[in-house]
Amino acid sequence: MLSLALPGVSWAHRLPAGVKFGLLALAMVAAMRVTALPVLGAGLAVTLGLYLSLGRAALAAGLRALRPIVWVVAVIFLWHLWQAETRQGVAFGLRVIVMMALANFVTLTTPLHELIALIERLAQPLARFGLSPRMPALAVALVLRFIPVLQGRLGALSLAWRARSPRRAGPRLIAPLSFSLLDDADHLADSLRARGGLAPRPTGRD
Image (tube, rainbow, N blue to C red):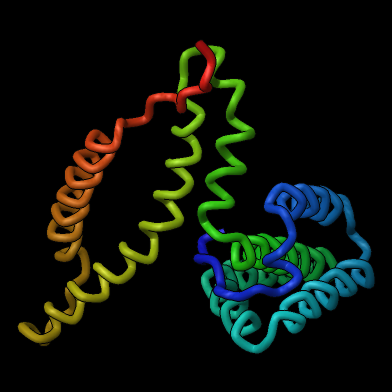
């Protein structure tokens, strides 16, 4: 669920965020319980159809999101193959790909403000214990928003290093990246304090 929302007004964008995440939860539970390869294959075909219904841009974004887990699935499949458990390896790979693709489909079609509003509604019981429901919502928003920022910052530092040295940067970029992120955290904290912090929203009651 690390992708930002894909701009659009498709049928999936118009569905309420609560409905999409509820269906996603049911699909995750079902995928964990299913072991039959034909059923998992059908689930993959349905997931592919969902992406195709949004167009090529959505399909390309979905494929990009699956890249980081391909090597993980491949390694675990090779382990199952070595253990003479080919069927289990295929089932595992299909299950992981379907689950990740469905999760990414939901985030692609759910604007960030809708996701934050949903999490804040679900976290309302925290207010009974004196905790702000905005805290978990803000945490999720920051994770989703800062991952691409972190990737871009690391890419810029890597380019700057290669422009100055023929050697690989390796762990040398950890320190400047950490300092830049700490600076961003300070600015973010100042911005939150200027906007009232994380206090619960007023209910309008006397």
